[in-house]
Image (cartoon, rainbow, N blue to C red; front, side):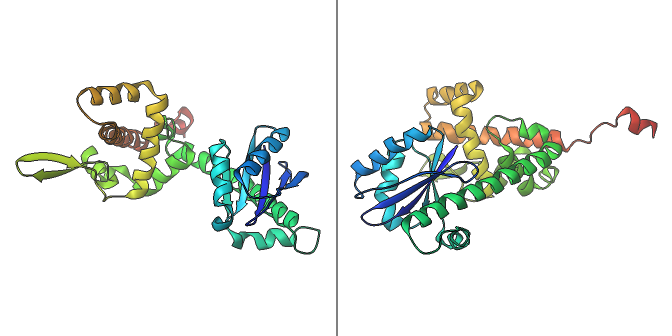
Length: 261
């Protein structure tokens, strides 16, 4: 994996490439800030391998077109807040202010943050594996998503039913009456952090999990729109999460050694 740090300007952009340990592999400055030059940057980056991330200091009025062109080419981009860059610039051995120094500082800072993020995710995964192993095994729930659910729910046994849990996380639809017709709309209330975990879980399962795909097709055959079918899937997954949390909340049977003690 390589990181391409970009110092963006109105008329030109400077890119510095670093590897996973921060060694500089190359640099390039565009002659203009046109889509043609941006795609030329992508072709130039191909020499360093396909596994790459573009890191841009977050000055959006300067790199809006660049960002659109890179995303259109299927590239991965992260934005680095300018306030995080001062320390990274101070750590560069070359003194002064220049576009390559700024681009290199962006790339170094992204590498440091990525390393810290990966370390924290490994620690969180270890903790969640002990607290909620069955939740972590659900399709579409990663370590961070499972940790978010555990933290927000606290103790699932405080909810009297799966329906109460669904109302709490905002996946239970709300009835709406218009004239003599009853219909439902999505809830905008409830715990939005939990809802934000269940949503990508539904998107992932719709793409990769056979049971979810079958469920969506059945709902659409019943007359649901794709959006309505996805909402129904989220409601169903809320029940799955609820039952799984109850399973994880059950006391672990003592081992033979614990019984003997």
